[in-house]
Image 1 (cartoon, rainbow, N blue to C red):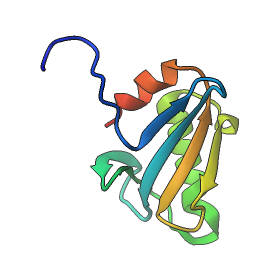
Image 2 (image 1 turned 90 degrees about the vertical axis):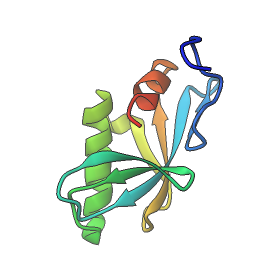
Image 3 (image 1 turned 90 degrees about the horizontal axis):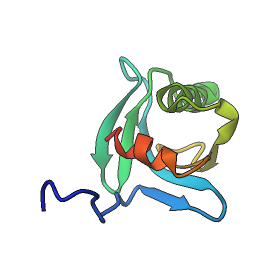
Length: 107
């Protein structure tokens, strides 16, 4: 229902482990974009366009930089856990539950 407060439905691309204080994001990354931006949900992932080529780890470095700036967190809090060489990535972010609100607002 609309307007009833907090939604109980979480996006499938977003998980939070309270015990570990860690957020897991499933991302679909599109390198070589005109600019880095969040494009929205895409096949069970959050699509992120990155303004860097996929060569020499440049897109991954730009992804970490973009998430750091967008979420106002340190780059050291962000780890690409799986998929460093593919478009589909599992990214882990260390932090408290307040990150859930920031990330959910991105879509």
